[in-house]
Amino acid sequence: VQLQASGGGSVQAGGSLRLSCAASRSMFRDDVMGWYRQAPGNQREFVARFRVDGTTVYADSVQGRFTISRDNAKSTIYLQMNSLKPEDTAVYYCYLYNQRYSWGQGTQVTVSS
Image: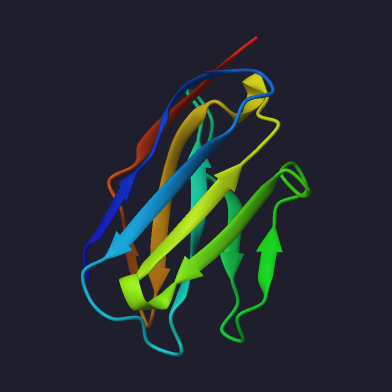
């Protein structure tokens, strides 16, 4: 499956962005989809995801500020990012796991102080 991420950009601290990730096929019930991010010089880190049962999981660093959502009809997941901080600056990658991982191409988010 191919994933196309979009929605990154540059904002000031306290601002908001919404990322989108569209899959090239319909979503299956046992798909797990979510987001990771990678800042310069750092390892890729988990941000948010859906469990198979549809509930959500967030990294502590984004809990309460980011919201992951999905539109199954559009085979798309979203990441609404509010109250952005400079430390949120990273390339954000969406992924889909179903027996194997598929990754989107990454979208840059830059937050200035």
